[in-house]
Image 1 (tube, rainbow, N blue to C red):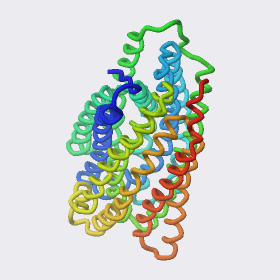
Image 2 (image 1 turned 90 degrees about the vertical axis):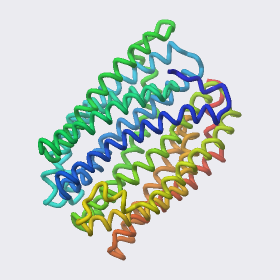
Image 3 (image 1 turned 180 degrees about the vertical axis):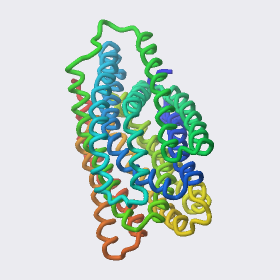
Image 4 (image 1 turned 120 degrees about the vertical axis):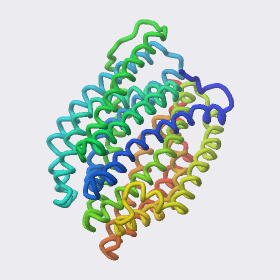
Length: 445
């Protein structure tokens, strides 16, 4: 259901919109986690390490999709907020064309670059072949991943957070069933994990695409273009910097993975488990920030700065409720969480994962500040300042990890770098919001 967020009290509007999004992303992270759980429990520690070692490469490839979603979401939300349904529909169809072209380019790049990237990451020989199997199958499914993400991004931009939830529940359950069938029953190993994701994501992509087309046909509008070059340039003006920003985060993850790979397969497996747990929390909280970003975008289009300010306060409340919950879980139950991925007899890997969860979850105490500020910067289309704040997070995280790791030769210092990066990003993003350059987007076009 499409939702107009330019009317009504911001807190209930945000809560009603954010909850389905949060549940959606929890399901998405659940089936991503199941890949690692099934790999670790049924295919062994090396298989878990292979999935973990592949993760920075897959996120680098998907950074293009994430950046495209930012641009498409901002433009679609703003046009919807202005009630320009003809141009909004043009923006949706234009976004789909852009998703197709970019997905084909990224697929070709992924097939050519996966080996050099794995070598660059110093992937141990014990997991190199398994990582290559996983990556090759994953890359073939990028077309579906792009389509799935852009369709759900458009639903969210229009204030509909329930439809993505339904598709994610469906794809999550299908992915879990296929993981267990292909890996636990048929013993396909890492290939089974990759094929499960491919099939589940592909099925969900086709269904979400058909649903989006039906929704667009139901919206009455004046004559519109199925591809509009001017709108494409507007989308790309926001998307391309966002792609570089997302790619830089992925490159930062690759730097961290390269440092972790120097400590051996046990630490790699522990890091893979810990990263899935931490990502589950951080992505869930980030979804609340993204919900506020969509709220901001619609109210920028409607020229309602009063609602943006009130929503900022309410979004901080929601973000801190999430942050405190995941902080408590990371401090109180790290061992039980890590045991979901790693068998208890793998003592060194379990210890590395537990330490990772405990240290990184401290950052949940500062992350909400950054995400609330990011919501304003992204929703207003101020990509430059959003990128600067995010780059500061990345630079401080990687620099801290590299310097301290070389001095102390202990992976614990790598885990601590997350909180340092999040804290610096929070400071800068808040400064940018207070400075107010983003308010230019409220001026009449």
